[in-house]
Image (cartoon, rainbow, N blue to C red; front, side, top):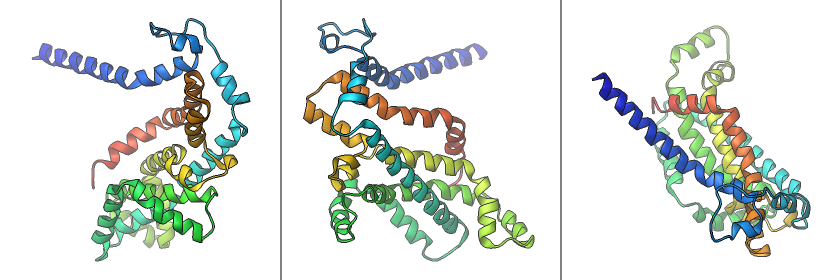
Length: 280
């Protein structure tokens, strides 16, 4: 029996390694393509490692490409992602706490509406939001893609965080209230520290959505200096043709913050995802 379990464990490990390689190979190919010359990229026999490391793709992106410096696009992407993360996490945490703790007759209807918004295609919101943003004069500003991304990230964060608050014993709140804490103090001093892993998970995924937004920024922004990295990468394909080493260098630069987030927050992400899946 022990030998059978050992064989099964080895088999599962081999499958896990194969799946890992399958998912990581596109990232590996993106990196090595960014380090190849154009001649080597279009060679008849593909190479799995650059014969000679070339940095022309990165040089063209960082110092030559386009009229707007890449750091401006990087700043725009960071502003959109950071603002989306702060707004969505704050509002979603308060909403999730209210839906979990206050038993109101409209709670089911609110949760159903939140779930429905997650099922609708994103493109359905573009036309009404465009008209709304035009009337309130925030078209062609960074506020427009921030609001657009928040409309999708807030429902996700509420659905993610609500199980955490449901899993906290109500006696903890009662004890804090007896000790003299108000409702907001209970929320801030008791509930938030306990649900910290879930808040980190929600904030991380929200940041990634804001960082990778293309549809909202492409629809609501027309000024070159306000474009985030995603739009400039999209524009580079049509404007300069497909220079694969340069395009992959752009993709690597765009991916670096995502990798840093997962590396730095790996412990919190794993803990938060597994804890939030226990109770719904």
